[in-house]
Image (cartoon, rainbow, N blue to C red; front, side, top):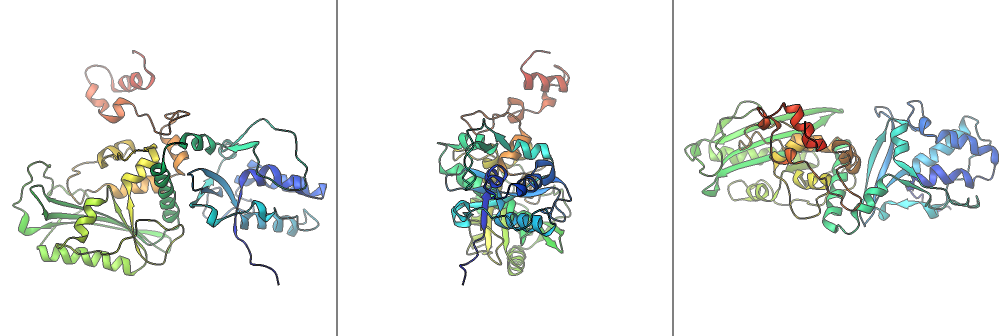
Length: 420
């Protein structure tokens, strides 16, 4: 009886550059190389192409030290050899790469899909270094001659500590779970009287779930009727400026019951991902005597879609991963939205919680390093993974420069460092 089937991943570079060298029949080399060509892999007629996916779906695996590698799944590799034989391009099934080079799930701290729909983009993801003398074809080894573009980011990560590594891993897990349309994603926010934070005044929520692949969205804003007279002193008062619908005035008892029912209904239907921006205070409110909506929460996201559970997703941590922040510093929601180009208004209304928009902007995007480079090209250095934002991106609105010079010229002068 054979042993158990091992399912895992192979490094892209091993399959692309080395597999064909291990084939015993010379006539099998050309068909395999043709199937693995950049143009072929991204073509919609390629055998590995999935319906509803625009391009070739590869995988980004994250190792314990935070480094990432572009991977083929073992199922993809197996299907390549099967397809080549089935269509008559090889007389027999070509040998599968040795299990010695198989990366198993236990070897990774995370793995997320990464789609490439352009040959140039895929080719750019694999930066080839000068070739060393060819090795014998007897076996496939890890290729030190062909390194992915993520190697640049891996080098930047060295010495940054475990916090950034954990943030990057969580970012990729969120991308994986979002792409799988797993469960319900519920962004929540509270407002409290700034002289006594036990007196909650508002609650807002925005959720996304999927029904047969179609997104179902819902949002709402509750105001505690008995506390309408409580006016905050140090925080802007925007409870009557809900931008996404009609606010509801409710009693403090109904306020509690509605929140509890919302959480209970969606956690009973499957996994629930509670989305916060800097989660600590809102979690305290959810657990407080005034609400009591949650008891047990999972702070470590699963690698694959779970069947149940309530999980915490923090967009402040996600943005820290995206910008490469290795310290404990985290940005406020207004600054995150500014950098993600999400317009905001009346942020201190609990219903105007732009956290869901920030989540979607990051979770539906590319892998963390690719997304960062796409948003802010050439803003990191060889030794520092953190994005260097321009002063006008951080602290000012270009319109502040009106009257001094045209907005376009003001931005250009800041970007390129010259006088207009």
